[in-house]
Amino acid sequence: MKTHVEKLNFSVDLEQLRAYYQTLKNDYKDYIWSVKELAEKDEYTAIRVADSLPNYGWAITTEVLDENIKSNPPWPEVISEFSYAEKTLKPERKTPLVFGIAEKILETIPYAHHMIMSVFPPSGATIPHTDQDFLVRVHIPLYTNKNVKWLTDSGYHLMDVPGQAYVADTRKMHAAYNDSKENRVHFIFAIEDRYLKDIKKITGIIK
Image 1: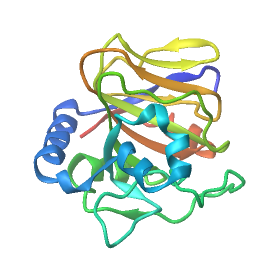
Image 2 (image 1 turned 120 degrees about the vertical axis):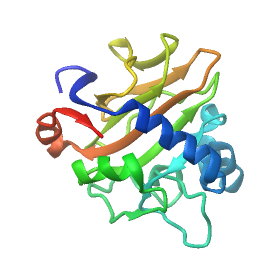
Image 3 (image 1 turned 180 degrees about the vertical axis):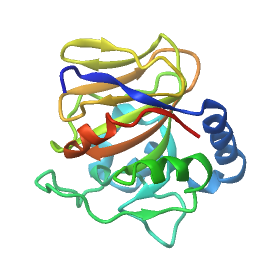
Image 4 (image 1 turned 30 degrees about the horizontal axis):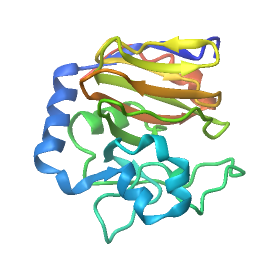
């Protein structure tokens, strides 16, 4: 990637995205995972995510699916068994949240992993960190504003067009901050960096 954040050549129908988010809020409250809840279960996780406690969301696909609970975390990094030495993705499973526009995105981008609806309340943040060195992440904002920022070692970046897809180079140091008084809501998924050329070929509106 030439820059830390790049605008992709496609967007997702914003009306459908927001309707999907509203359905999650109304009908799938039991499926919410929260950073605070994860931290309470595991000391390792608590240390890693101390600055992210307000954040929560819904795991749409995950490789750490526990059939006995509904609120599964979307990322393996937050559990103590995870090792950054791993260079491949484990098989994922779909949660019951794969429907509607989320299903259409997955059909269009079948190599998408760790799919999530992510909510950063006011003051929500992540500490500066790097992710696995073979993954980048695609962000599609639903609700955002000029005080929601993505920080890298080259400065602040904005993903400020709702419905527009952006790819962030999470192999490099980055952090996210919501310094506004409103929720930051993003639809996010990871792809292996070998698929960067493929995702840049997608054009138009997914709907």
